[in-house]
Amino acid sequence: EPEVTQTPSHQVTQMGQEVILRCVPISNHLYFYWYRQILGQKVEFLVSFYNNEISEKSEIFDDQFSVERPDGSNFTLKIRSTKLEDSAMYFCASNRVRSQETQYFGPGTRLLVL
Amino acid sequence: AQRVTQPEKLLSVFKGAPVELKCNYSYSGSPELFWYVQYSRQRLQLLLRHISRESIKGFTADLNKGETSFHLKKPFAQEEDSAMYYCALSGGRGTGFQKLVFGTGTRLLVSP
Image 1 (cartoon, rainbow over the protein chains, first blue to last red):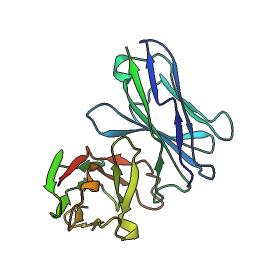
Image 2: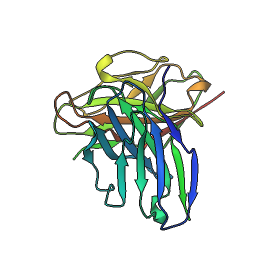
Image 3: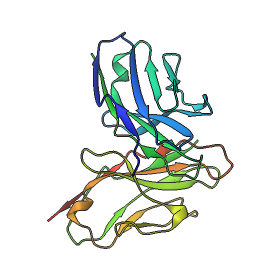
Image 4: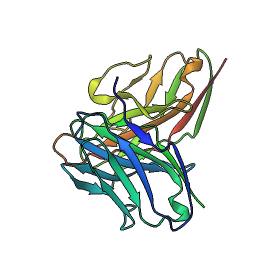
């Protein structure tokens, strides 16, 4: 069964550094998402992406964040200048059709900003 | 604003006991409701969704629009049910509201 994959599984970075989190969605899926979960808190929506553009973003997704689908398979989340409060688990998800369709989640990338 | 509330952080039961994980929501339209489960060291995976009205691993959930609830139930808990359970909602067809809004999760611990 196809799965969403994410790399790396863990990343440690220094405050102010740029990080790129990578995701490979399921191949026939068209809608892509990033969520994050700060330790002990709920899973929060960051951004959704369809047809090579952002379709929705949350208040968390400020100018420090960007997303890209650089080729036919990868979907990336870039944090330009990381802050301590960006430390979280970042989940990528995808689905084939919006709304009612199940979103399939990747295993997550644990980001630690020191 | 959309909101999902899971009042219990931890639910601890013995094997064979009934389980009910509570979920209440706030949404102005007709939402789609989901239960996701996260077993230890594994990814979030869909357990069930209200639109499919099916039972997965013995779990069921009924959408009660009057009480704005979508509680997850299982008559006889098994040890392998121990996991983190998240209730989530998204918008209905045609709403353009496609993101998932999650509750804070309930950890279910089933003891032998």
